[in-house]
Image 1: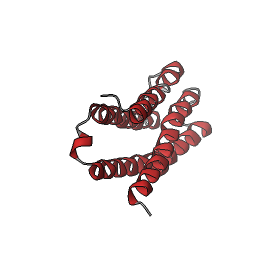
Image 2: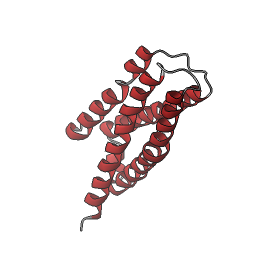
Image 3: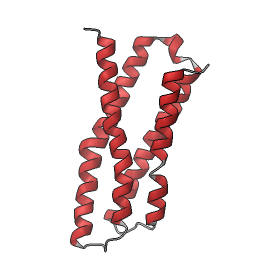
Image 4: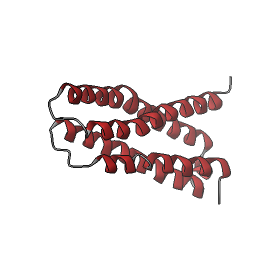
Length: 144
């Protein structure tokens, strides 16, 4: 079995899981904005957000990074220095920052400190999609 293709497959699977969370968590926040602090519904959203972040998103992001770095190491220094790879790394760092931002938003809901609106969460829900599209085009077309 080709270890590179195995790691690449696992990398894609982990990215899919991570993206699912990055797309779903802001959508949960949209509905969480509509609840009253301390209500049964609020507590249910807190629990859903916790489980999504801790059991799906965080592990998927960590595995994506580990496998991505491993794959890049297998490809070598010459590949790592190519423009498309450098830009992809910057965009993945931005996606990781967005992931962290969602974690901060979750804590604000828990502490009754959320001041963002439903529309804000609807808008930021598009960020991971835009990043994903650009990253996929970079990987497929490998521009110079």
